[in-house]
Image (tube, rainbow over all chains, first blue to last red; front, side, top):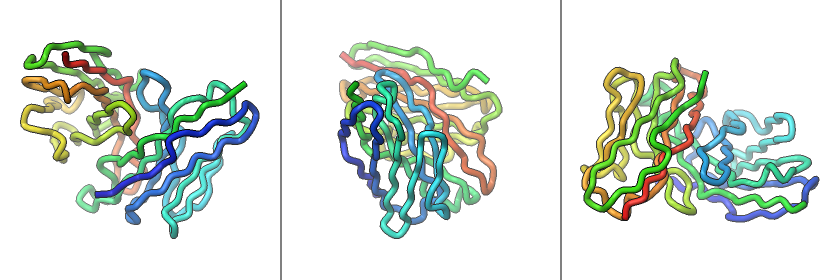
Length: 117
Length: 116
């Protein structure tokens, strides 16, 4: 089966940039997602990128995709204490049975981001 | 649009009991997904529906688990004869699927199950 790999922990100081890395394995994945999870809560969609793009920027968030290396990163500029959470990378393998759109998402184990004041 | 809702938010039960969880998706969404998340792990896919049809089931979904979406709106996930290993957060997500679009999944707050 496919495995999505992420480092488990990242600690940064408030105001610095955070970079969370992810490696996925299924080259057929057409979309890749970043979700945020705060303690005891569900997952909040942050952003996603289509596989034919190499970069997407959305306010403080920048997603970089290296499809050749199957490497995805999420950069958070000017990190705030409210950004402290677990960040999950997820891939959506293309499933032709579903008319070209995706079925289930495959998640990494998550990166716990701690922001120190 | 009130988002995806799940009930109950917490459930404590004794081993061997049956439990049922409910998920109400975003109203116009035709796809509904169930995931399970254990401590320190990412969500793992269990099953999903397109309208009322259950299209895919994971091998994680043992025969003690059953899911329904009878009218293509809300869904229920039932676990029979619960085991301690069933203790987890059960997450529901929904999406609006159309050919060539992103099919982005939006998650509910989850139901945390504790089996004693």
